[in-house]
Amino acid sequence: MADAGGGGGGGEGGGMMPDPTVRNLLEQESLKWVFVGGKGGVGKTTCSSILSILLASARQSVLVISTDPAHNLSDAFQQRFTKFPTLVRGFNNLYAMEIDPKVENDDFANEGMEGFLSELTNAIPGVDEAMSFAEMLKLVQTMDYSVVVFDTAPTGHTLRLLQFPATLEKGLEKMMALKNKFGGLLNQATRLFGLGDELNEDAMLGRLEGMKDVIEQVNKQFKDPDLTTFVCVCIPEFLSLYETERLVQELAKFEIDAHNIIINQVLFDEEAVESKLLKARIKMQQKYIDQFHMLYDDFNITKLPLLPEEVCGVQALQNFSRHFLTPYKAALKRGTVEELEQRVSILKSALQEAESELDRLRKGKQFEESVPLILLGISVL
Image 1 (cartoon, one colour):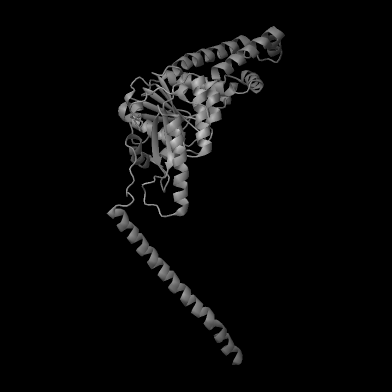
Image 2: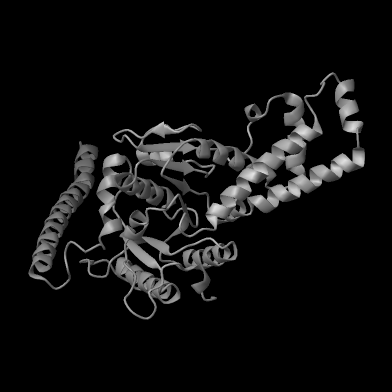
């Protein structure tokens, strides 16, 4: 794996280790855009929801946006969100919205234009997402949020999102080529079909140009580490480490700052774990956690514990948020009196369960043995 140094923005050199929390994000008052991304199923939505809750306590107004087609923000907050910002229940400065990265029909003024643009979007992969994203950014810019948190789709989609200016550039070139090739034919055809000036290629070019301007303007902001940062979420497994490395390298290529990694679903070694399976898993996880620290020694790496239940609803999110600000400490350390006492009580209850199970089996066995004798008695009669 290549060295990820290019993506880091918070290196402390060979001195102190960076703070293993997300406090740096709350303290960076200039931050305007926070992207949260990573492989599918690592807990991005939970992390972006909690980051937005924490930012809401430090900033004037926060908007959290899901750009993942499989929207989970509504599940995380247990509240229905749409493509318009909605106030999150229990807050007066936290808003959430879920946008579909596909262009919707009502985004266009009329059928003719929509039909032509859908043809164009088929010709240039990703241009529909780019236009939808540009529309959304235009909307977000007209509102005055202190900070916007993006709950992004899995890595591949996120990287496409960062390539949008280039994609729109390609779209414009294609449009210009069509215009040059067919000249006034397009306008004549539209009049012939009674569409009038609805399908005017100049109007569409203007529309695309406008979007490109918005995206380029935002792209400048995305490349400014004072305004934008990317938080990588992962789990301590090989594929997730590999994906994080790929993401960090791509972000460096796009000149987007990244200096926070959240490692989710960690089993802590200090926990009083008896299961052989869990012990093996802890060992495996530790190997990858060590690799994360070695690769990203200048990143703020936050480790979150694996919980026995899902983190759903504002209360659960707020409870879990403490692990983002204070490194997790196992409730019971191995080898302490408390841990031994708990182990004794666990063994006692396990023994009681085993005894009652044995008793039940014995009774069952006695019944099974007595059944043939009863049947024999009946047949003799």
